Length: 170
Image (tube, rainbow, N blue to C red; front, top):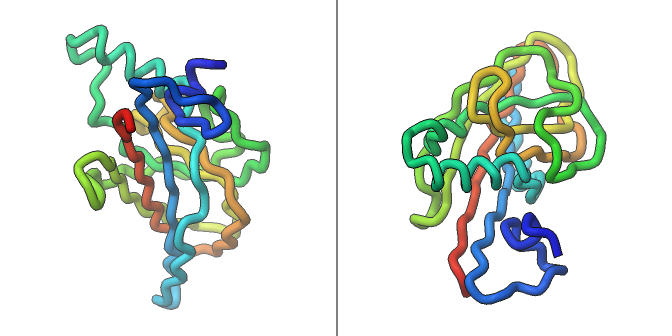
């Protein structure tokens, strides 16, 4: 069994005592240029990355501020269709615009981290992937999500809501 299975709460792997699970959920609302809103609801669950798991451990070991935990707010999206893998460190095909700095709050309970970011588009694209990063360029990828295409045109936007639930031992 891989350590990342334990960290991610892989349901196929046995859960030993003391296992912390991290579960990512991505939701989206399409903001059309005509003012209408299409709530797509949950569009993907998981892939919390190995890079984030390693970052988390480094933050706990360092304690010096070299690995701040409050920086995972940068939303990016793209048109890549390669299957998700927890080993990924970037989007497959970023859409080409700047990452959006999202707002961060606790979710519905104190063990849920939530970041909401809206990306606006200046062209016609079929958006199929989303990532949450620790920096406005490069940085550590917390989660890459793959989903059915959301078609956008110039003037449209997508409001992404990413939630990371951190569950203690059951």
